[in-house]
Image 1 (cartoon, one colour):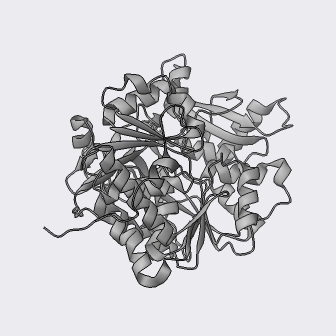
Image 2 (cartoon, rainbow, N blue to C red):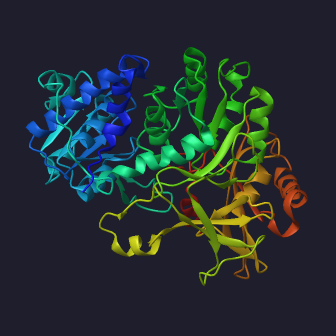
Image 3 (cartoon, rainbow, N blue to C red):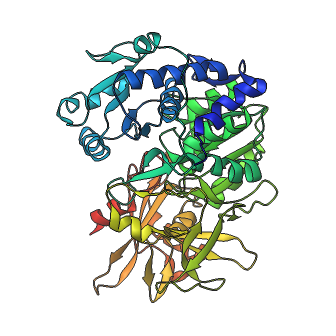
Length: 511
């Protein structure tokens, strides 16, 4: 068996190649070099050994994006233990569900997040120990004190490229999160494909990701990709508000900014940031998590003179597998297959569909997860041999580009014709009164499905006659049968922590 540990490739290689003294992370308070991170991961590995955690067992992470996150994540992988980063915005009972599901032996938690789990740590039967990152251990172990007791030397465990390295829980856009088991070789697969061949990441890049490290997109942006070339990353432990992101862009002057559609739209429309720029060195932005509306991409390029590479990824496939490229951008479409990935569109019978017809996307991916933990039926229906079902509907254009239509369970037919919620939403937000929109099906008095829209209005938008104006606007943009029959103004839309609209909650409410 050929030994391969992802930490050897991601971290130790950089030190061996002379980048030991180069800054790898700053989190606005602390910073660490590649050599310093290597030493911290060894201390974490030794700590886990002392705590009695064995190879292949799990440790959970409810941690903000600070320099402690990569130390714990990579330290666990170094010793063959499986880290499970968790969404930092879950509720107490959601944490109870996930901690029980993954059977974590140790919980690493940021001081600011501990109050959310303090009432459940004592009733997790598999949880032996809590380690707190910060200054207050709340009666548990303090990470800084524990690491200070450990040696910075450790013999990295000889794992295998096909051995589980870490788990990520899906963001729950369609229900309770599912644990996806990812392998040691999956990290390099995403770097060798999207990061190198599409993004063109370089050693001199400085990266800033609004998406957090617990999210598959953020993990690639802020850990796998920059470390694969010896670059530097700025971590943001705070909420990615427009003001916060503009402040970081101007303070650290990054070359790559990874965002999500909701954030790009918010930054463009934040009244307090109308005069803000994005730093002088920014060369590219990326977007994922949800399809980027054409209007948002064009407005961003017009204001900042920097393109956004809209891409499509998933927790199951670890990062982006379909994307626009720097020399091949068309806003409003998801682009082409990332080199190294194959995609196809199929109908309900599993047959390939021709150009111009809606089909579900399947992906042949080098970075696909091994399956869902404790969910055999869902694993079988998602991971079909070499192909992974995404659950997303697309149309392939004649030029080979793919256009997103919606989640398979979000799509519906009106008068026998498929309607894409995303298409209607994209039309709605081009109206000057609308900031955000979400569309779901609702039955009319005859029991036939028609579009219903929930809209978040811009500050100061006039509401008199707005319903009719929005309906006419959509008719003119995309077709008379697609317009929303009902429009409801709301304060906000339900979303996952990664920015995806949770339409199933709106469907349930509409029902």
